[in-house]
Each structure stands twice: as C-alpha cells, then as structure tokens.
Image: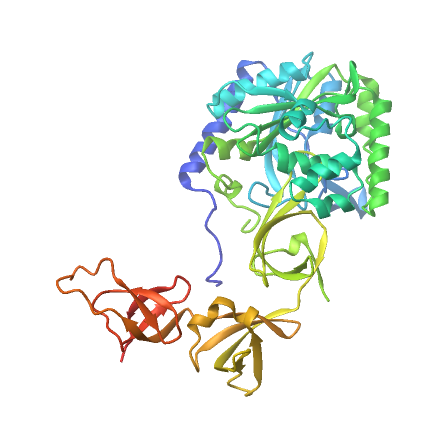
Length: 325
Length: 189
C-alpha cells in the first residue's frame, strides 16, 4: 500500500454538485433553443495541423488494423461537428472531453471539458449574443463588452497591430520587460500574442466579460476573412477576469482556402522541426459537399465553472487533475 | 552544463539569466487563446537578491546554474574574509563581504550556516533560523510595566539591534529569529 497515494479528488463535494447543476443549466439552455445535443468520436484518424496545438495519439490494433494504426485524441470536436452540419444536422451542440498535450497549469489541464456549438445562418456577432446570454445565465455576469482586436491594442498599448512594424512591436514588448525575448523573435504573430498576454489581457474584461473580435488574418485558424477588410478574420475570443473562455468563428466554408491554410500550418511545422500532421480528408470532403453558412464557438467549461464558483485553480472544479488522475 | 526546458522549471531550480545564477520561485503556464504559449516565471537573482518576473516561450531552454548549498560552521573573520569550515572534512572556505551581506550581524562562532556556492565560490551566506546571542547593552526595564508590550532596543554581541521585552537585561543570552530579526525567548540555560 502506498500511504502517500493521492486518492482524494481535487474538487470539493460542493463544487462537484455545482458542476452538475451548471451542466444541467447548459443542456436546458440549448434544449429551449432547439439546438440538438450530439456526440462525436474522441479518437479519430486525422488531427489538427495548427502549429500550437499538440495532440495526443494512441495505437489501435484490431480487425482491419492488425499492424496497428495511429489514432488521435481530439483537440476539439470541430471537424466531426462540421461533417454533421454538412450532412444537414441543423444547429448542434456538444459537451465533451478535449485533449491537448503540453498544456498544464493553474488554468490548464491536458484533458478538459469543452462545450462547442454551431448555428447555421448566424454570423459571429449573432453567436456572441448567444454566448453572452449563456454567460449571464451560468456566471451571472452583466452584458459583455465588445472591442475589435485592432482597437484593443490601440487602447491598451497605443499600437496598431495591423500596421505596426516588427521593430515597433519589439519596442513595445521591451517596454513591458520582454526585450530579450522580443529581440530574438522574428515571428510577428508570436510578438502580437506576447503583447496580448501581458499588455492587453490583464487590462480587459475586469468587470464585465469582453469579446475581442476580428483577429489578424494570420491568426484566422478556421474563420473566414472579413469581406470588408481582408487583413482580419471573423474570429472572436471571450475574456473575463484574466481567463480566456471561448474562441469562435464565422466559419470558413471554402474547401480550397481551408486546404491552403492546413498546408501552410504544416509548412510552419516543418520549419520548426515539429511533426507534420495528416490533413483530414473527411473534413475537406464535407466542405466540398457544402458546409452551411454558420458560426461556431468552443467554450472551456471548466473555466466557466472557475468563474461561477469564484476559484483560482482549474483543479478546484475538476474531479481529478492530471497530477492525480 | 545542463539545459532545462520551461517544462522542467519548478521552484528551486537554478538557472542562468543575464550571466547571473537565479533560483526559480514560481512557473505559470499562460496562453491567451489560440497561438503561442508562454511561461511566466518568477525568479530570484542569487547575487543581487532581486526578484523579477520573466516570460519565456513555452519549450524554450535555459542553461542551468552550477549552484549548490552546503552547511559549514563559522570560524572567524579577518576583516576582509569570513572563514567557514566543513565539520566532517575540516576543509575551509572564505566568503567575502558581498557574499556575507546582512548575515554579518547574526554570525556567531561555531554556528552552522548555509553557504550557496556558484561554480565553487560562495555567493550568499544564510544564518541558522535561530541564533542565541548575548545582550551587550540595553536600558534597565521601566518599573511597573508587566504587560510585555512595547519593549526596548537591545544591542547584541554581534552588533545587531533587536527589540526585547522590558524584563530582559544586559548580559543575558536571548534567542532571535534571523528571518524576521525578532526576539523569541530567553536562551535555555
């Protein structure tokens, strides 16, 4: 017997009950709005190409895979849900586990609970409205603020993120105490993300939740570009009290543009010496068949609970964290 | 020399930064949404004692610092160096004024101190948590004060000045907490 075994949960029984209540609230919220609950596979043949997402993989051995076949644990259910949408599911939501390697800390656990939903005929602003309503229900927040990525940089740092030179970004980073890191950094987006982390995120969403929208096109991921200003993409994030809560898109539906972005991701991976990821042919085929015009968002449920329960650590709201899972 | 990635950073790890050995105090993983992850690391510079926050890209590596703590007993000072000895091997090490720093006021012969060595040379000297020192000078207690509040200053044999209760007198040996510089009790005889 190991007497130092940490069998006890990291969550309190009170928070365990509150967690169940919040999940029930979320399900009622979507039932009332006629959004269908779905489940999709946690293990899949394909995975994400995003250079900053590190997926777990495992080996399937069985009929049809005698020699073993690599399967990936989902980093989000996005691809499978888009295939359901293309097949005519209508509005759908899912509460599931997502897995991201290399992410652990006060607000991160490599295995976490994600709420993701898609709304045909919504754009990203419509979806922000709906997420705001959910926040008010679950976290009792007031109506959220909205500000563009460009404006929030101008307000917080006096810098236009869309036009600033690399040198200007480095100078502002140096003023925040990151001179050394900035000097060696040649990637514009990494510098912007550093500035966002230290110069922006600490200043926004302190009293009411804050949506930041229209991220630079270079950080578009799976969002469509803004037709009025192709320097930015219709992607938004939600921040409140130092937590990043959600990431949403007015979804890119063009299969060719999507394939180009995946290829670019893999090129970046190659340059950095990271493994190149197989591009999911099923997702691209679904886009070719026709993804309805829609907006989608992924919400970190554990962080929502951290806010609802007013606690500082993700381990306080999950039954067992990675340290004693 | 070993290199450490941000995933290996934890409290107590010694790394090199700006040419100075540092002690990692805290390591927080931060990611503002999609994109690059960072580690916000709180460190103490071991020579200057300065505490600062430094941000690294997650996965970056930093050179480790060859820093070790050893316990040695204090022997004497020649005015320029403070000499310590390993009680097992009788090997002696001399620390200079900058390494001894404020610890000077707690150094009593034969007390066991912790010396932090960087590349074999002492950079800091930490006294025991509790030391017993003799009071060389303090005012006689004011009659009638029995509540033990307020206290009075007392100069100790090392030159340190601490506040002591009124009933403690010159010539007595007292126990002091070196971390706070506060009086604890009269020494056990």
